[in-house]
Length: 366
Image 1 (tube, rainbow, N blue to C red):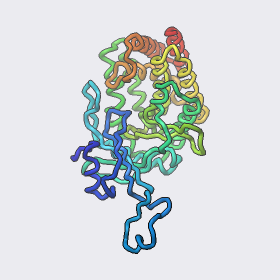
Image 2: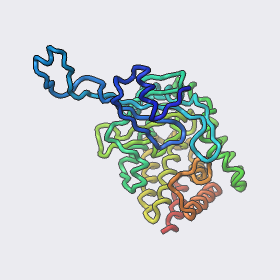
Image 3: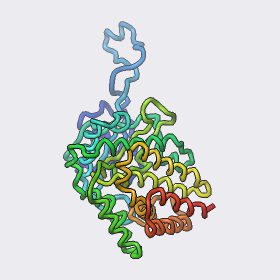
Image 4: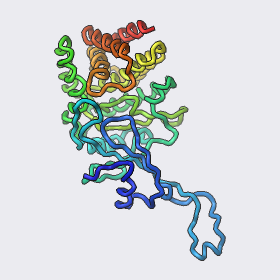
C-alpha cells in the first residue's frame, strides 16, 4: 500500500491525473487518531474566472489565458491500522469502505449540504476522496475549547442527529451496517471493556452496558458524534449550519449512544473550563432537549433507563480509556470526572438524572 503523507500526495495525485500541476495547496487535517486526512486545493483546475485581459493578437498567437481558475478542492482519507494513541489500539482498515457506503446511502435522505460527497476511491491503496466542508465553516471542538460556543450550533447539531435516527428506523438497506466488528473495535473494546480491569466495582455494569449497545438495534448511528467531527457556520444560513464528517464507525445500534457522546464532550469541556462550566452544562441540556423534541417519543423511550449509565461510562472512558481527551491534563479535574462518572455508573437513571448529577459535581469545582 502506498502510504500517503503531505510530502508525497502531489506525486500520488499527478500519477492518477487528479490534479493539473504541482501548483497545489496541501493541508493535513487534524482532530482524529485513526487516519491520514489531507485537504487538497488545485489552484489551476476548473474554468477561468474574471476578465480575459489578452489582446486579440495574443489570443491569435496562442498566449495562455492567465486568469485565475475556479480551482478544485477535495479531501483524501487513508486509514491507519494502529491508532495514534499511547495504548495498543488496532482497527481493521476496511472501515474506509464503511464510510464510503454510509456517505452514498445518507445522500439519499440527509440534507446534501450537511455531509461530504463521495468523489472517487483507490481500492488498492485504501484511499477515499470526498468533498470538503464549506470554506467558512469552523470546527466545533476548537470553538468550544476557546470558549466561543453558540447555543444554536448545539441545537442544529442535535436536530441533525435526530433526523438521522428518525430517517433510518426500520429502513431497508441496513444489512451493510449490522456487522458489530468495527463498532466493537473502535468503541466497545477501547472505551468500556478496557475500563473493566481498572474499575472492578463497576465491571458488571459496564458489561451490561456493552450487551445493551450491541443488542436490539433501532436505527443507524454515527458512532463518533463528537464536536471534532462537526463543523459549523459562523452565522445561521439557509441550511442547518452544520457539516458532519467521519463516518467510519457507522452502525445499526442504539441511538442514545450518539446523543450521549455529544453531551459527554460538552460536559468534559465544562470540567476543563471550570469555573466557567455553566455554559457547557446549558449546551449539554440544550443538546438533549433539542434532540428529544426532534426525535420523538418512540426513540426516546427506547433507551430511557440507560442514559446516566452510558454518560458515566463515556466520561470515564475519555479519561481512562484508550483514547483520553488531550486537553484535560489537570489531574484534579481528571479525578473530578472519575468521581462523577462512578456515581453515574452506580446510581443509574435517565439522561436527565445524569445531567443533574454532573451539574452537582461541576458546581463543586466553583
